[in-house]
Length: 530
Image (cartoon, rainbow, N blue to C red; front, side, top):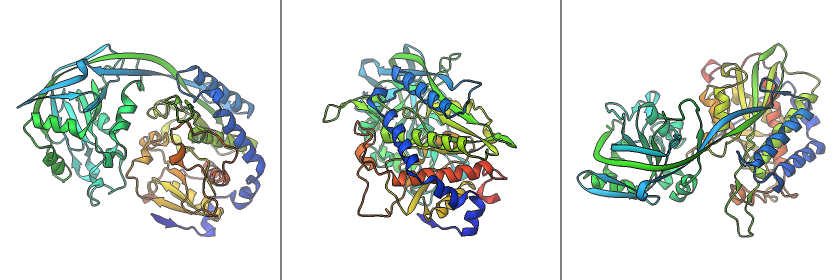
């Protein structure tokens, strides 16, 4: 990590509302309101806020009513909602296995050796005599001098691609342990599809993935979600995608008369050449699917002289609904921290902007996407259908699991170094008497796991704001750290939540939002042009 300080002059320049605004906003009324919203949105009455259920209806209607009560305008052509289609798919190999034939015969069993699915709206996927190709990491990255697809045609074939990127194994490659998007399993599917492959299986490794095989299985056995195109019925998407266990990959390589470990070792080195395995399989999967609509929620506050530009304040409204019960029998995944705390924080800033005596120069969009938990689909849809063009979007400030948090001397930021947005956070922290740590260890890919990243893919500046590592009062540690509640029924609101750090971080983002909304130039300029 690198520690950054800023002079008082720069803080005053970038934060014109500065210390006096901070003092005005640090009050008990704001915290009480924040608690009320979190308490309500994460209550059992909202059933865990799962998309495409009756609890979605209750959640989005509640959000619309709150935004209307705050006096904001609907964002989507006079409507609070932006509907879009989703497909939920459950796929199973016929007979529970893929039989592969090469020099030898082998059977890849489901879900021990592989977990597979599709996003196509069809009752059956059939890929006769599909050939398997080992493509290393499955990466095409000219800026890093890396191309696993050079010299190989994967059209109509099944790509095997390793999880993560070469920097995980060699700090001199890519960004070292700071994983790039090329390391994400979603990228592997996207690149294979661009290359015309029939399918892609990501080779699992617990350390490189940052989670065990059980996570792959539990996440994909049923109800795999994707955006739905009613015209093509998703026919152009990969016929089969999924994960392959190392034991399953070993069977595949043995059927080819090859050594998996040698191939993996070679794939980690520059100059690796992808190759066909000489193994084929008649892939057949039975498919059940359901197509439904879900909705993003949005409100806008129009700016003045730069109203055609926008700053997006984002907080996903969805969570996991009902699921496996915990030891107490609780089966509601309330999502109080993730992400009722983020929703409440965005609503609080909506109130502040609306009540401010000075209208911002740029417009402010308060966006509450659906389906973040299942694949960032709501923000993906918005970024493909924005209310203000992406090139006019100055920044995305994302509220993700912002509370509970104790007050810390520092603030951690992931994804820094890409735009002038860094300066705004450094200045805002300095105005609070705090400092920023820019964390350059993204080995688990956390930076890519929330809605802001869809904006980043469109060229919009965004970072991840996390609570710091150094509590102001070490004698009062957080009673509810993430490992206790993350994606569990225990993610419930408690009256003894410590929100001192949460409020400080909300105020930090408020200062950044104000500065961005009124700055003479956009932070979209790259770092090299500062």
